[in-house]
Amino acid sequence: MIARCRPLNAQEIEANTEVVVTVDEILRQCCLRKSCRNEKYSKLYTFDGVYTPHCSTEKIYTDIVHPIVQSVVQGYNGTVFAYGQTTCGKTFTMEGLTKPSHKRGIIPKCCQHILKGVRNHSCHSNSKYLVHVSYLEIYNEEIRDLLVKESRCKLEIKEHPDKGMYVKGLSSITVDSYNDMEQIIESGSKHRSVGATLLNADSSRSHSIFVIDLELCVQNENEEFYRRGKLNLVDLAGSERQRKSGATGERLREATKINLSLCVLGNVISSLVDGKSKHIPYRDSKLTRLLQDSLGGSSRTLMIACISPGLNNYEETLSTLRYAKRAKNIKNKPRINEDPKDNLIRKYQEEIKVLRHLIAKEFQTPSCAIEHLLSE
Image (cartoon, rainbow, N blue to C red; front, side):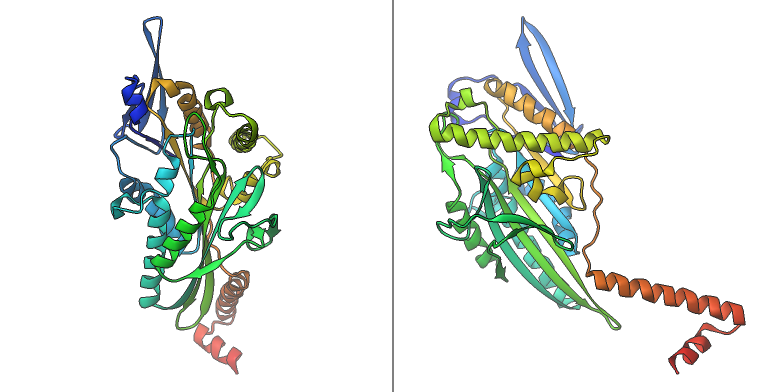
């Protein structure tokens, strides 16, 4: 769990907005204060990392995201998602700018990292790999395929005993170059649902999930085994107060759905942290059901809490930091994704090895002799 504070924007600078957030990278703390009757009330929040308005996405990637992506190449599941109010820098963090290259966001950096990682892996060992990419959005509690233009097909979430949660009928494109990835990101981003509010002229009205699915076949001298890693890169729609955003009509309907799904996400987080809840409400929204493995499951998950430094957004910043503080206490149990048959074969091989050792010990015969007799 990390927090990232953006700089004041042009409107806030022009309005001479007071800065009420202080970030201490060494102590990994965010301090939020508010003037009240000439007294200062401060609230302190500690995370795994905090980043000032002057910090680059590249540094965040190197410090925190890189290890998660590296583990995906090794066969684990990973999730990175950005949470916060509208205009706090979530999409900038996840997508960034196309040019210059050092201002690219987490999604393109992950694409480069994974492609480079699997190529290096295949060069130094007898292994083969496949990289598949999907891109979807959850808009008004409906799942849309961002790689299919004007798709009217309603996509449903299904559950598979090995794959876990997946979207039936979602496009999955095989890629082997960064140029392919770049085109997919650009195409999908253009199809995202955006709309103007008082807070943001191009506000994201949906949650988007960019999925990288990696299949790896590793061949050693005596065996061949399969691993699969999956990376979810999530740009959540902005949490917002409807009165402040000026939402009416269709925008009000969108905001209601957005806030509802974020509320369910908060309920899931609270239930997981509580530890006493017998029921975790994953099924109450499409977002939480799809990210079930990322919340209390086997995925390595990072939440980036994006916040604004200005007094004008005090309530929203306070809400985001409280949300992040709760999410910080969720404990996942990451595990490598191997072919179940592979695990069974390995289990039997270990049992055979133990039995041979016991037989050799019982009859005082060297293990190599027992092995020779068994092979005849």
